[in-house]
Picture 1 (cartoon, rainbow, N blue to C red):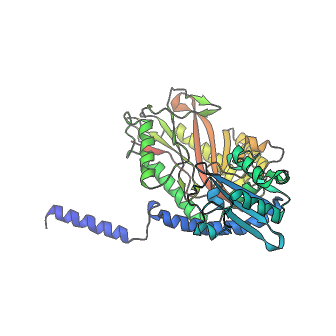
Picture 2 (tube, rainbow, N blue to C red):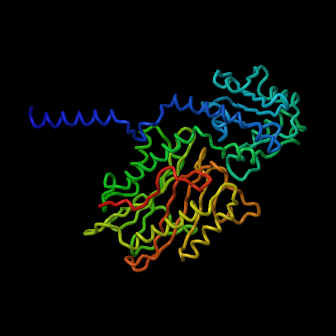
Picture 3 (cartoon, helix red, strand yellow):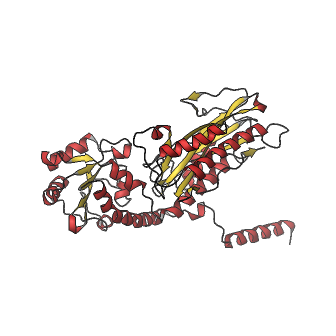
Length: 442
């Protein structure tokens, strides 16, 4: 056999061995879309089973989610099967029927068998408005929860036209019973299901893998690669996997001797035409959407100068300071049911004792990238009624420190990190390991 034949045979054997191993990549664990829908519908059944106690806890007798054609409500895919809805009005109604338990009705123009697995679907001979009026008269709920007057988009998503439709259908007496469903929506969306964990962990692992790839010589050639090149690689790779993004990937560049542009204390994202150079500290903020779940992760890379084999010691110290902040927050300050004001103050006090300049701006994760639930940041800590951490919740441990770097003539460098985590009795647990060292681009 020729040398080329031997190489080809070796390659085939290697591929066969790898394909036969138990090791799987995050990409290989992604489900086809049809299977995703099946799994999400199994989650929906579990969510509906939890809903009645939540409604009673928040004093909601009837909860209505209004979906409009070409203007989907952000709640629809989490209260109804995650399938397309294209009627002028699709209404999903949940009613506390007392001893009869939870009643669920889908008032849609066209019946659909998968929707009917989760809802009663009365015939729409006279339209959704008449059917809704009949439900109101039959059950006479004391309160009707709607997505209005909330602080976040998913808790104030009812449009003016949708509100007018409900008033016209149900009448002025029903309108008097309209209340904000914000507390109910928050608990509903902040409640994580056990079955979500495996898929979310894989999502985070894939996010981290792509971040590691794009911040490597595979993509970055110092002096040639632009910020636009980095973004385009991520867009194309995520699109090829059949996934989505919930925000544009941001790239930030810190460079010795260059004062970065700032925006409310944060380094501004670099412009597309920025060319990445040797000696740059490059930061990526990146998240993926999959199965109604969303990741959010940050990683940093250092582009080695000519003759350098490692990161300057001053930059290593800067990362160490951010690790200290992460440990203070995740390992010592955070426990279930602790008010976020106490969590924030405890972590910041520890940083003050170590003379580390720190910022904390953690936000919930899950069904949305900036999700509902307890955030850990200065604003939440100053609230008169700060929320409490809930066991099992997902969060983005997002924070930064600023450290003077001797090798950069004392210039302060921000090391920003973000890691998805879930809350256990012992504190926050990362879905994938945090970044222990800067990625290197030789």
